[in-house]
Image 1 (cartoon, rainbow, N blue to C red):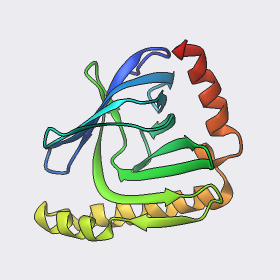
Image 2: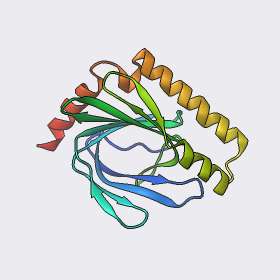
Image 3: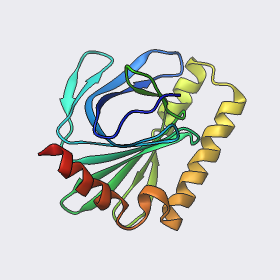
Image 4: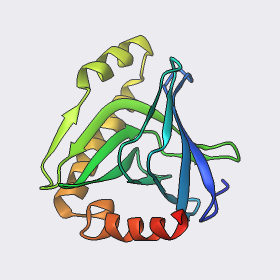
Length: 176
């Protein structure tokens, strides 16, 4: 698999299990790009929904994608601290068009004090029935929620102290 180059701008494409395009982030700067890990950043980036609606992100965000884990992590820098939005998703793939993953609806929202909530379980159950998710996929996704929760509790990866701030400082060197 190819890897995006540090300093390059990429799109991020989110799909649904049935192959339909779900959401596109127009511009993210690659801060680190390997075949295994991509760390990107964006701020006030246009996002296009599958129904054609667009919106713009409100704050700087550091995005962490891994080719072996069934989740991705977005650390959003807000005035009152870092909030994390974690998508339970397929591992990413990258081609010359974009970084791509399948969004499986389940999300973990992590607050600055490292407490968290699981979101969108009803949406997941609906899509699981509509798109006939295999039983093994259900098991993989819930195992990865537990794995992700352990990362939060252990302050591992993007949840470790200073991780988001360090990558945000790097992002600032590209922006100006």
